[in-house]
Image: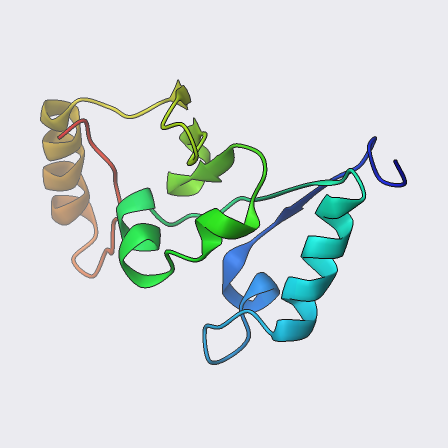
Length: 116
């Protein structure tokens, strides 16, 4: 196979998605060609899987390898549901961090992923 030793990992926003948050048809065709010739394609994003499922469910049909989500804290196979890596922190720890951040930085914006 032409691309059997290659993997492409793409970000979503501004990389795979255009300004309209859609994947251009030309890109979809290129990804399908790459995969049909042995290539491995996946995505890595700061977004949480729940957000991807809700806003961009078609992403699952594009990948043929586990995806990286939640700013690198999760690696999972969206086809089988198998979770390979889950580096989430306990909700109690997250609450303490949020309180500390709010006390130090009044205008802080914090995005965290917990176990619940």
